[in-house]
Length: 422
Ligand code: UD1
Image 1 (cartoon, rainbow, N blue to C red):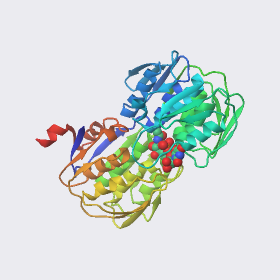
Image 2: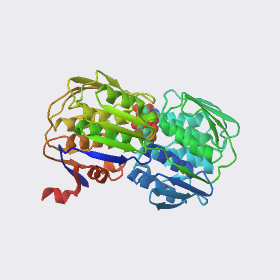
Image 3: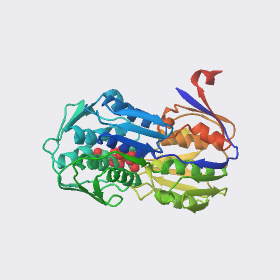
C-alpha cells in the first residue's frame, strides 16, 4: 500500500493540463467491445480504473495496446460473454459490460460490481432498463445472467436518472431493431461523450444531454478514431486546491461549460475565475462561506465534487452547509478532515462546516477516491508534514497526482509503508 507524504502551506503556481475523463473513457471502453475492427482512442488517462477495464477487454478476447495516452482496441475476436468476479469487484463501471456484451454476443454473465464505498449502489435500475427491453434477467445470489435473444426496442422510464443505468440501456439498445427511448435519462456530459463516440461508429442516437434519449437500432458499428472529453472532476479538484492554498493556477484542456454549477459555487466563495474556451484560470482570494450547496444529478452540483469543495470550505470564513442528495454515505472523509483541525459536523446527509483559520498536519486514511483527493487538498494547506494512507483510491481517478502537484510547486511524495516508518 502506498501513501503520500505532503508538506503543506506551499504556494502553488503554473499550468495544469487536464487529461481525459475517467467517467467517459470507462463506458467508451465497454462500448469498444461492440465494434469489430480497430478503435483508436486518444486522451485516455493512465488510471487504475482504466487499466482494470483493459484487463476485462483482454479477458473477453480483445486486443489492447497503449501508446502514451492513446489506446488501440481491437474487438474482432471478442467471444466471451462472462466477466470473472476478480475484475467485477474492482470498480462499479464493470457492470457496463452487462449491456455491452449482451449486445455483442446475445448474453452475458457476471457477479455484482464493486467500487468505492459511498453508499448502497444497487443495480436494480440497470436490470429494470434491460428487462424493459425484453432481456431475460436472472440472479442466483452470486451472478447476474442476461439473455438478450428475445430483446426488442421499447420505451424505458427510469425512476431516477442513474448515469450507469442510462449507459447500460444505451449500450444494450444500439443493435435493437426499431426505436428505443430512454425517458428520464441521466444528462451528464460523459453520456453525451459516449453517444458521440457511438454515433461516430455508426450508431443512431439522438437527444443525449437531454432527459429523453432515442436510439434507432443499427446492424453494426464501424472502426473509428475518437478523442475522449476532458475530466471535469479533475479540473474542479485543481481549482479547489488553488482556492484552498491561495494559489494562482491555469488549467488547460478543459471545457468549463461542463462544470458550471461548481464554478458558480467557487465564485460564491469569492474565487476569482477567468474563463476562456479551453482554459480556466484562478487567482488567490479570501474564501468566504457558501450558505448552502446541494448535490444533484447533472446539471446540478456534482456529487463527485462535493468532498473537494468541502476541503476548500474548511478554511473559508463563516459557516457553510453541504447537502448530499445522490449517495447515502459520502461524508466518510469528514472524520479524516477533522484530524487536520477542520470543524465539520455531519448530521445524516448534511455537513455543517465552520471555517477555521489554520489546519495542522495529520495522519489520515483515504476512504474513497474523491474523499482521498479532499484529504490531499487539506494536507496541501495545512501547517507541517501530513501522511495520507491508502492512496490506491486516488490512483483510480487521478493520473500520478503527486507528479502533477510537484510540477506546480507542491511538496508531495509517494512513499511505501516501510519508508513511512523510518
Ligand atoms: C456515476 C459515476 C460516479 C458519480 C455518479 C453520480 C462513473 C463510472 N461513475 O456512477 O463517479 O458519482 O455517476 O454522478 O461514471 N442507484 C440505484 N439503483 C441503480 C443505480 C443507481 O439505486 O440501479 C442509485 C445509486 O445508489 C446512487 C444514485 O442512484 O444513490 C446515483 O447512481 P448512478 O447515477 O447510477 O451513479 P453511477 O453510475 O454508479
